[in-house]
Length: 328
Image 1 (cartoon, rainbow, N blue to C red):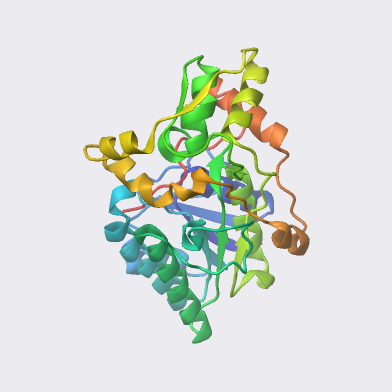
Image 2: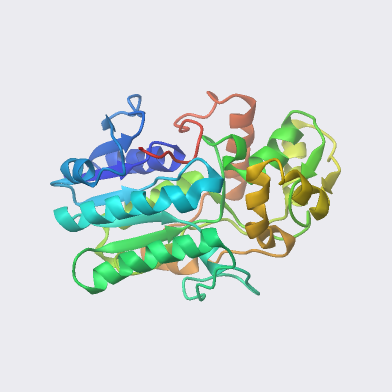
């Protein structure tokens, strides 16, 4: 039996903790609120993730530390992320615990084909540049022999346990179709192929990487189902709920830009609009080959997502709303 510390008690953190417990390990789940008391075999702890001394104290004796945090305000990443990342990297260095970072695809910027782990990191905005800088700082620490690090990268989340703007697909497509409302997209081409990652698979991979020495020193892509467009998903959801396939319309970019003058979240979407204007496809074949992990079948992901939108208590084991949570 090993011991692990998971920072962040949203859907990623809870799914990671659940997978580690199922593998027979001790898990400490740390968040700002101390959530997770309902998870069998998990020790929930309330703490400030920017307090490196406190995080170090909680991590002593652990085999690995999983960073499943995500600052909740999209417009303040430049302020919120650096102290969180520095605190966890320091705790890993001081304790000898491996550091598993839950990342995303912002660092790749605009791409012309499917993204692999070898795709160059060429961010096209400040949030992507921030994620790249944090990853490079962690890699430099490993190269200096101070820590073991790995990063997993997922595309936009879907699946049970997440809600609100934490999932573009659920907020703009699944929920409106289930509730028989119009489907209006804030960004993108409704027919562009896009990868959607089941949030449960992100937790599965985080747990696998934390336990496997082959993980250290590089990034891995979360196994994800074949890409599909938002219009295609709208039709699939409509079929599940017995509704005629609705029209899927995109709000013109100038209108969204104007709305961004008064809504900070919409202003921040400009940096990632390219992910939805044309195909944005994740290649996770290397992770699948090395770790023998297949993605959850899309049909299961979508059925569970629809069931969760209809009734959050309907899907056994679904984590609470919110992908992840700062512990500040």
